[in-house]
Length: 423
Ligand SMILES: *Cc1c(COP(=O)(O)O)cnc(C)c1O
Image 1 (cartoon, helix red, strand yellow):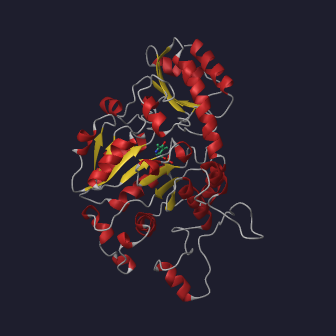
Image 2 (image 1 turned 135 degrees about the horizontal axis):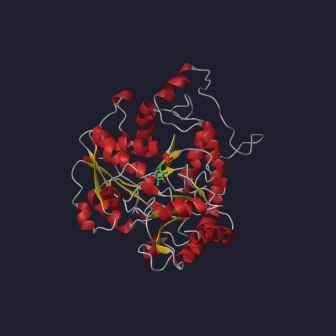
């Protein structure tokens, strides 16, 4: 499938039926699989052959979704997880253990920030945060012999910081460190991190991939372009795994993906369910179309808000005066997605008054689905963060996050206009 264009892959990749089989992937609602011969099953346990034996490790419906996302990101292997958070957690655990560290942008999703700043240190994994706007020399200083991953988001949620891929890819290359990108808000329809030097892509498929707010899910995509072999940083890839008869992951064609599934999914079990994989799979069919509309709508709405007298500031990379406009033109030239944030002039109470006056646009924790919605992060998703942490995450107190849906842009604008009038 690799030669097809992205919109074709959205529709066609991941599942090809044989004659007489169902046209779209059936939901294999089964925990287990039947084999006639003992040896067939033994080979599966030893990773000597491909197939299914227990749905905690793999399932045909989940595999269809994994195949589709792997194709969309041009990766060699994808792993479906229970949620975006479990995908990030398992990706970190695949490379890092107690005594190691990861280096991460500070402009990231609130849940990921908590995982990195609070939970991972309890397990002995330190996270060193950097300001995404900092020069390479400053970011580089955080890397030492125990650094196992550089973590970033293509478009940061909710700060809408666009990743400077060249800067981070340069650092990753120089120090031979795995470069991981959470591509949730850009999606492969707008940006494929592999083209800009990333080695690993993580998604919360809960957002645009599913697109309909119907199923939680996460995906890890091994892009197959990082060499773990004899890299002193990655001892655990170069030493035999005693739980698999001495398998050395760095010797395999799919090193990261195999280790992640064989160890992390096996031991932690945060796998995607077949039902959620099915929903996410059919969601991806329309991904390219939806991202085009989300981006076009957002462009019109950003323009409207930027000209409105009650708006103090607005942040969407489509705007020429936006700080990340140039980076967005370089890495996501065909559309910048539906996520934007803005601040209403005056006190914080105005945020609540505005949001409650909206009719079409609803208040939700969710983002990145077909319906337009708003959120005030400082009083919800980012509640746990102190004022200085909020600042570091790029979330001022009057920030309203707007996830622009695929409704008619005129209706969305009309709703915003009438609510602003009431503030
Ligand atoms: C939502 C989100 C996550 C977490 O995903 P869940 O599916 O909610 O666990 C991670 N990263 C980004 C950028 C997100 O928007």
